[in-house]
Every structure is written in C-alpha cells, then in structure tokens.
Length: 264
Length: 264
View 1: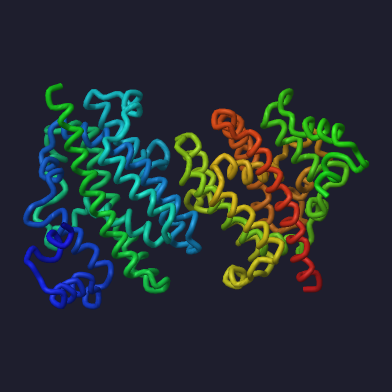
View 2: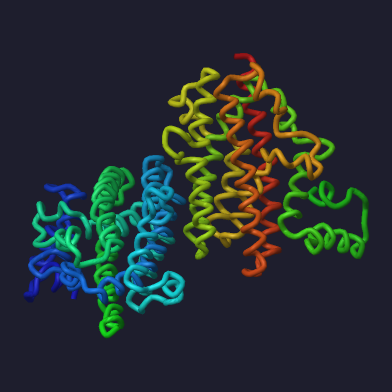
C-alpha cells in the first residue's frame, strides 16, 4: 500500500525496488530539510491535493466546525509531544524553540497574542459552537488513533524522532510551499479579505498561515542540524513518514466530523 | 536513618512505631498542602537550619559561586521535570501552570523579564565567572545523583508525583515560611539593600524570593486539588520525601563546590 503510493505501482523485481527505495530515501543532493518538504508536498499538495485541503479552499461552516472539534484534541497532543522533546533533549536551542512553540500554540503570550488554541475556540464560538460543549466531545476513532501514534513516538523514541513527527506537519499551512511545487495553498488566501468566513475564522487561519511558516522552518533547521550528530537520519525519516500517514487520516477525520454539521 | 531523623531516635516497639508513622503521614487535620509545608520547614528551617541556608544568610563570593556552578544543572533538570508533567497531564490548569513556570525559570519573558537561569548566569559573571566556562563544568556527584532521582521520578512516575518532587522545593526561598515556624529566611533580607553582594546577585536572589512564593503556593494548591482525585496522596507524600532527601544532598554539593572558590 505504502509502496504503491510512494514508490511504484508496477510489479518490480527486488533489485529495481531496492534501487527505487534507495533513491526515495536519498538526501545526498537535497539535504534532510528539503527532503522532508518535498515528501510532504508530494503527499498533501501534489496533482491531487488532500480532500481536506480542497474543502478548505473556500470552507463551509460545516468544514470549519469539523476542523474545530477534532483539532482541539490535536492541539492537546501537540503540547504533550513538544513537552516530551523538552523533557528529553539536552540542547538549549531545542528547549527554547519548543517552549516558544508551546507558548504560541497553547499557552499564548498574554491578551495581545492569544494562543492558537484560544483562536480555535473563538472560531468555534463564532460559528455557534460554545467552548463548554466542545471539550465534552471525544475525538473520532481516526483522530484518536493518530494521537496514539504521535504520543507513542513522543513517549518511547528519541526527541529528534518526535521533532520529525510533529514539526513537518506545520508545513500544511506554509504559504511558501507553492514555490517548491505545491499546486494550491492550504486555503485560498482571498478568504482572508472577503466576508466568506467569520472574523474569528480569519484570525485563526491567518495565525497558522503566519506563525507556522517560521515554526516549521526553524524546526526543520534544528532537525537537519542534530540528526547526523545523533546518527538519527534514517529514524527521523521513518518517524516523519509514519506521522504523515497518521496526519493524512486525521485530516480525513476532520472531514468526517464536518458531515455532522452539514444539515445544521 | 530516616526514622531517626524524622520519627524517633529511641528504640520503639512495633505498635508504637506504627502509631508514630501513622501520625507523621496523617493529613486529616492540616490538609496535604500544609503537611508538605510543615515537613519542609522541619527539614530545612528547624532548630538547626540546613548548612547551606546558614552560609547564604550573608553569603561570601565562594558560596554564591558554588551556588551558580551546581545550580545550572539543577535548572536544566527543573525544566525537564516540568516538561514531563506537561507531557503526561490531561489537566489544562496544570499544563498552563507548568508552562508559566518553565518560562519564568528557563525561557524568560523577553528582555524586560529575563529567566531565573539568565539571572544565575549574570550573577556568576558579576563574580568573575564567565558563562562560557560555566557550562563546561560537570555537576558534582551529589548533584548528579539528585538529578538522577528527579529525572527518574519524572520519567517513570505519575505527573502528580513529579509535581510533588519538584515544586515544594521552591519553598526554600518562600519568605512566608517564618509565619509557619521557620527560624530564619533563605537569606538575611538586608543583603538586598546593602553593598555586601553584587547587584546581579541581588537580582537573582530577589527573583527567587518573589517568584517562588507564588510558584510553590500555586503548585501546592494543584497538588492538593488533584492528589485525592487520582488516589495519589500517599505516593505524593513519598515522592516529596524522596525529593527532599535528594535536595538536602544537592544543597550540600553547593557548599562543597564553594570550597573550590575560597582561596580565589
């Protein structure tokens, strides 16, 4: 299944397959950082962008509410995963990076700069979904399964593998991906100007669009810097690919959840 | 040894000892929070305050440098332990508390509010010890051993046990302990006014004196709130006592290190 999707759909002898795999994982010419960007774009922003990305180009209320309900659980896991990195690393630059990331995503920097989590709750409220009701909804099975994957990596594996599992996911909102071959943005940027979506939805989407660029860029630099030092390049690649699979299924869960709101 | 120090020095039959132990761990009348404060005061601020506390009343340059060298390692472990709590808890109030604590101790809140770690480095510099040299000095065995204890609790045990291992230690600088029976402060407060110590040393000590009061108070409230819910009261008491033993030895390591600076 993974081979079909990523390497070749044709019946292939062992020698050819081995060569194709070698080429797939080869970072010699591009470096680890660009390899990650390239694989991420292929998966979510290629000729057939991910169905959630298509739905988000001009999102309905139902799409945004599906996003809100499942994403609250994602952001809690995000915080836990980043905390595991701090708990395990002995590199101060990694600690400070992750601390800033958790502050931005979950803690916030005071009333002037609410966290991404707070902006998500406000987006939900602006669409008629109170935060008190939100926290009572458990994740869909696909979200819960993805969270188990991420938490398992964070709990058991090296902190570099956790970084590689989490931070490339912030590429989803990176507005620079089109320079590297993405066919569309995460959403059509024109929705930030018009009246298609609520002001709170704009604030939430704009924040990701702006903060996540820097987040994923800095994290990829740290991953590229430390993976060879710790002899973890292959583990980092494998962890990234496992996480991308989980993320794909998690994005489908957002769509699945949005169906519940289509008639309301 | 522990029995001698904490329960009784006399030869005691099993029944009496059992009753003495029951009374030692009893929180019925005072609550968990006050029990922790009381046991902490007994250990470090009783009739014979801890030798490091005595040395810190009017500290020499050597005492402060011993503090700086060993405490850099303590603060790194502090950050790791708090991060483990965030990684494992599912309580948002605990996550936000720990996040603020790591920001205050290690990350800082911008140039206006440098972290406790940064203030420690500046204190070292003001006493002629550059930060570049500092990070090259490994911890003394007693510090390393205490760090292993704290990291082991954080890695393996429930997040409440980690909270109970770490945050009561902030009581060391709590200026309200004298109301509860402490015989002295962490240091003689008059040193914050005179010219006995450098301005940087004042900034470092003042920060602990002010921030740690609130830190330990809020953490003890969270520990008291959640320990019964998670049926962890006894584990929390045991974890606190293990940590206090490690902390006692760690404070001795600060004194041991300071000897290296006595002739310089």
